[in-house]
Length: 86
Image (cartoon, rainbow, N blue to C red):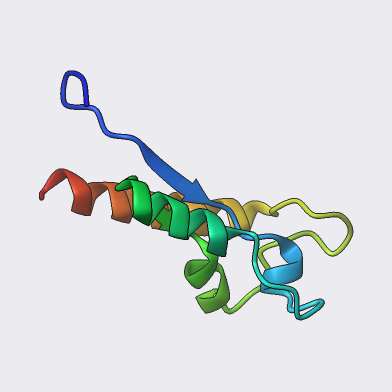
């Protein structure tokens, strides 16, 4: 940590995971385990996307729609604010 900065790895869920298009293990799991082992802060957006009532990805393709960007921004804002107060 230099000048008070900290590394935070943010895991972005795939559309496959959120829309449950298959039963594959999310790519984040082994990477989260590695971050935990190395003491690196990490934050998974998947739970926030799962809680969203309306669609967060475009029907075609694998990109977020405007709502998906809003879900991600609000989740990261909340996470970072909690980290700053610690």
